[in-house]
Length: 217
Image 1 (cartoon, rainbow, N blue to C red):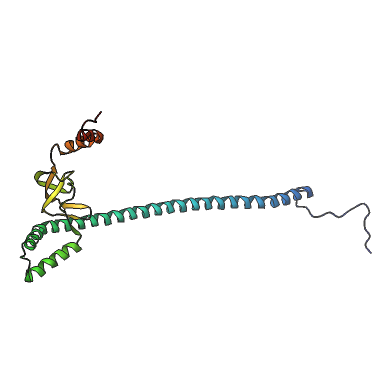
Image 2 (tube, rainbow, N blue to C red):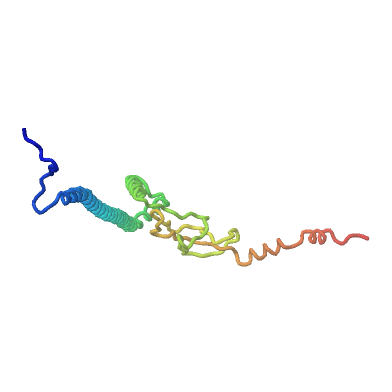
């Protein structure tokens, strides 16, 4: 049997030049380095995510701005197209106004008969479908924005400047007047309103006294 030598204990192998106390701190430092590396990696990922979000927000804002500009451009093109169409229709109908005037005069003189009547009515129908509207009536108040006075007179039965005759009808397309109505106007008689006002100011009681004469005592 092998006899154990008293006074000696077995110790773990230690690399040359190092003691057993030096091995324990190295193990601890390796364990601490792992969490620090994970934290740095997480911070880098968060920074990259923030950059991606910022870039996405910028691209979204650019897309919204481009979409708004396109919508504005589209509305402007549609508005310009409608204006050009309205101008073209107005120019065409303006050239047809003398023909419509001839048709109106022929109708007034009873000459709108036969095939000419059918053609004239078809032309008037097409003009109406294109938005042409006729205006101007006898007895309506004179409006310088839509009427053109060619004749002027005074009349005792009017209280304001009034169109008493339509010499040539006016035409409009929507709210746009392409020709004013040419009219003869009549104004109230000079002094008629003054005389009427003076008569209204007289005291009726005083008139009765004049009619009845002085009272007897």
